[in-house]
Structure formats: structure tokens, C-alpha cells
Image 1 (cartoon, rainbow over the protein chains, first blue to last red):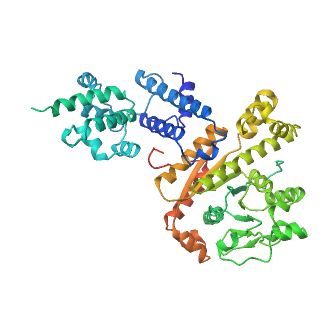
Image 2 (cartoon, rainbow over the protein chains, first blue to last red):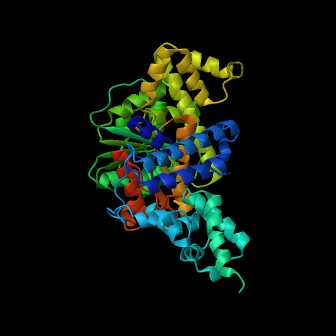
Image 3 (cartoon, rainbow over the protein chains, first blue to last red):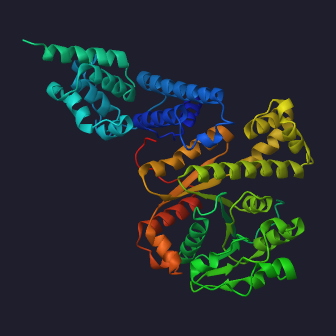
Length: 182
Length: 313
């Protein structure tokens, strides 16, 4: 990604060049929510701010976010300041293989890597922080029925920019395993 | 407005925003008091001609001298300045009775602007009245710093959009007028349906595309069209984040840069202070509101933005 491109995408997400991955994440969620739903900020402009225009803006926001994420994964010119929490952590080979299955600890690791706090997800999803913690710690006895759990998992996955179906599938499989009647 | 020479390093700040009761006068008076405390020489001008009450925020009775003398008997503006109890701080009052802002003639307005620019102070703070009348908007556009105060509720936001759109439209018209495209903007706007233009952004885009000459002028002139946003009477974190959302919408929708300068929380002490006819920044300096006003002013001076707690809106 050229510096001009990264500048352009960061502009669309309304953040500065020093934005961290979690800033990008937050900006994306905030803007997507703003332009997707009803809001007293947008309602007064409803007549002039057509659905078509909105859809276009949402598309640009999603595109910018996807491009910035991809650039980060490929470690192209877009660089982020080192994450204070992880320090200069060396690549962990053993965690790579494990990442393929979205277990509770994996979800927590990804969340921490993105610099997202439980409280942020909790506020965003209007979900008890304790429940998110239980999911991460795989305290299955504290979790709700499968159908509700699945919805929560998918929403959390979106917050972490993960594939919702894969996260829910992986996690629920572990949940069923553990809850299987003897 | 024509860019007449400015008085030295003096800066003009204008506070507007469309709706009444959002706290424009509170923000203006507190801003002025803080700037004066910081050692700047400040004169505040109450341009809320229909409902002037800036003086009561400094605990003074309506002075004999007011803008009325300027409009009716041709008094010089600099002779209408009255001192307040605060060092560095003086005031030109409006008048409740005799004039409404829509009766001011264009020539009077130009004369007023010229004299405002010549006032021998470091800061002129102008408190605008409610509404989006041309005179109000022209005064707003004359300022070096255009400040908008709104409250977190839908009517205030709606009026703010109206005010911003009118200001931008007027700015485009006045800019192009200087370059001899006097009628073209209004002409196209009046026939916007046949041009397939639905809103102000599309009008500006159309002008830029159709006349590359205009495009260059508009780009450079509109680059200085910057609004500083203050959200007053916030009660929740959501209220604070409204400023961020409004900034986003105005940027994406109208394509104009907005600075979210800050917010001031709702607090009964403000109401109490007005009631007691005391200067808020002086008597309630330790409150959160006062600190927030300080942040707003510092951000406006430095062209910075407030940092908003939490990232989600």
C-alpha cells in the first residue's frame, strides 16, 4: 500500500497517521454504526442524505477498513506503533496452529492483540462484560443456551473482525463437547 | 465579506449556531473571561440585537451606551466600549428594544465590520443571536474563528445544519461575487432540479466541474471555512460522542472541515451563576465546566481537537 493510499483510507475512517490497529477498529465500528442506523445526527438530513449516498459511504468505510487490515496482515508500508502490552513479542509458532480453532483463550489473545478492552465490546454489544469473560475463560456452565451463545459469539467475532460463522462454529463445537451428557 | 486589513494581530471569534438557548452567550462570556485571565485584551460584542444579555453575564446593568447608538446616531464603535470588573475585558452591548438584526442595512453592516476590525484589542468575541439571518451569517463569516455551540438534542442539531449550510452557501456566493460570478450560484441553485442538483455539496461539485476557474477559487477560499464545534450541556458519554458524529457527517456530507473543539457538561452551577449575575469563570473556576471551557479555548487557539473518551459512538 502506498503512503497516499493509506492516508486516503485513514482519512475515510477519520483517523490520523499514527492510528493503531485498535484505533482503526474503533473508528470502523463507530462509523459503520453511525451511517447504518438511525441517529439524531443523521435524521435531520434525511431528505438530502439519500439512502444511495449512505450506502456509498458505508461501502467506502468498509473498503477502507478491509484494505487497512489487509495491509497490516501483509506488513506492507503501513506500520503501527508497537503494541505496549505485547512489547516486541516474537512470533509464536505454537500459537499459530492453535489460532485455527477459535477457542476462548484464542479469542482473548486476538482481542488483546487488537488492543480492545472487554468493556468496549460490552458497551458496543450491550452485553455483560462478565459474560464475555466467561466465554474467553470457557466457563461453559456460566454460558447461556446454545442459540443465544451463538449470536453473542457472532457479534463478538464482528468486533474482532473475525469470520462470525467460523468463530461460532468452532466455539460451539467445544461447548457441545463439554456439555455432552455422560 | 471583503478582506479589509485587520487590526494588528487581533483575532475575531464569532459564536453562533442557529438555535436559541444552547448557551452561546455562556460560552462567549466564559471564553472571553478565560482569554482575559490569560492576559489577552478582549472586547466582547453582543450582536444578539434582538435579545442582548451578554452584559448580565458580567454582572453589569445594561449600559447607556449600546450598538443602538452606532446604528441610529452614527456613534463610533470604539466609543461604545464599556469596561467590566475584569482586567483586560471590555464590552459593547446590544440593545433589546430598538433594533432587530434584519433591519440593519448593508452599508451599516460593512461599516460595523470595518470598525470591529479596527478595535485596538487582541480578541474580539462576537456573540451572535439565534437564527440564520443573512446579517448573522455575514458576521459569522467575517470571523477568523467560526464557533458553533449546540446542545445534544435534535432541534439544536437540525438548526445547526441549517446554519452551517446557509453559511457555506453564503460563503460560496460572496466568494464568487468577488470574481464576477455574481448571479451564477443563485441562478443554478434556483433551477437546481433541471441541473439534477439535490443539495449544497452537489452544487459546489457542479460549479467546480463546470468552471475549472471557479473550482480553483472555491478550493482555496473554502479551505479557510473551518468551523469549531462546541457541544454544550452534555450529560452522558453518548452526548460527548455526538460531536464526533456531527464532525463525521459534516465532513462526509458537506465536505467541510470541522474541529470538534470540546464539550461542556451540564451543571446547575451555570444556571446559578447566571441567576446570581456573577461571572462564571471567576466565581466557579474550580468546576468541571470551567475546566472544559478552558480546554475548548485552548483547542480553538491551537487548532486542536478534544480527545473523546472511549472510541464507540
